[in-house]
Image 1: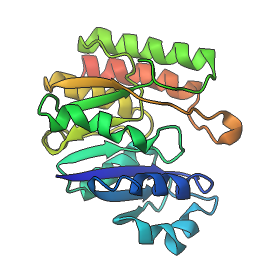
Image 2: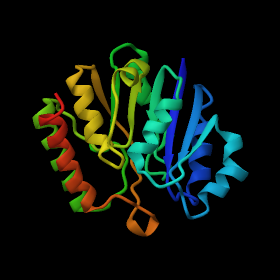
Image 3: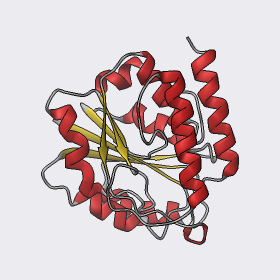
Length: 229
């Protein structure tokens, strides 16, 4: 079973080599690794061309910065696996969790798996308000999707080719998370959630999401709940 691992990248020169090594360390998986450089300006693009490109299956270069959601769309278009894993490049999410994330799909129980940072896995202690904001956005999303997720905003979303082929996405930035959740819920796909480890970054380490993205997430939750029937 071929696993497509999609890695959107923007200015991750310090973490990209390690995350690629961690992804490739999963020797038990038959996989294709697709990286999408969303017009990095910190030297990441040169690193990819000179070194990383030899260690992955496909490289896609955006000619301007479009956002995480746009990078994921590019990766999905290039993927051919039976299962897709979205993998951030910043080392907040550990590829050691792949077996747990894949298990419900491989066992035929799930079409979509969310990796939850709030179900008891090892995690770095960081921002109270970020945690509260994530829980609020998840609760708001759950109200409209009638799901009981604990972590809608998680970066780890795993799903089958059937899910990929039946959906289309439009959000360019972090709005991908509520958009994806609303659309898989509307299609009545079987959704599971598993605990994952989480090693959050602070802003001095390059964390990109801000309160503005939280406001945008509220907008997208309402948009896809109320106007995208």
